[in-house]
Image (cartoon, rainbow, N blue to C red; front, top):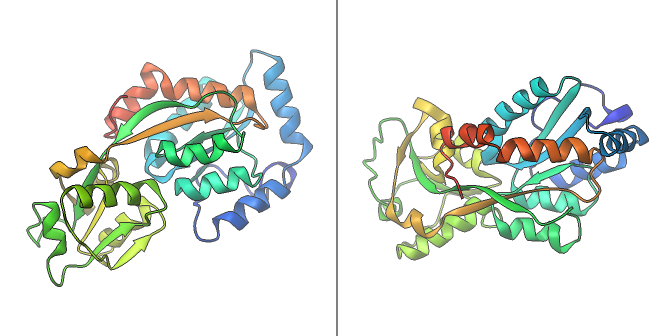
Length: 273
């Protein structure tokens, strides 16, 4: 699944980054064609936004960015927003390896730094929202989990995000702040994968973002815990240096940071910077 002449079907929403994410992203890079470059040049040379805009974004942004993508396409007829949602670390690795993208929205400054340090951003990234952790339990919280320390109870199956991704690094920071030692049943590639384990009843609980708990609705029950205040994640966003459609990328970033964009994001559970 690639862009331009290499695309075999219309990639409308998300291509999830996974363990094979780097290979997929490199394939995207290999299939980039002159069509994308022409679109970018056209956008840069005129005020009118058109063509495809490709956004690499942290998995926790899936619901809100999908909504904003639909809004963007309505505001700019003739545009198409393609998303690649996944772990921020895998997305950053793909970008620095040459995968074509216009915008990168990361779940932490650390993963964004991977891209900025490689000289792959156009300008300085800016923080557009913040997110904090919450415990996701089975519906109704049958295990009676009320605090972070409860996750260390014998026999309780808990999953965490891999520590290489922002939700995993934040979970580790919160556990350390609470003095809680925990050996998870598994480490998942991103926050959506961790949450899915609970939704499928393959785990009793997961430490995820509150935005993901809210998006899951009645599939899980959320439990707040005070240590989450010690592990709040800032989310930076930027247009990329080699963006095939830089004009459209800039317009998408402007929408995200606009009052309308901020309403969508805060409604999803994010907080403003």
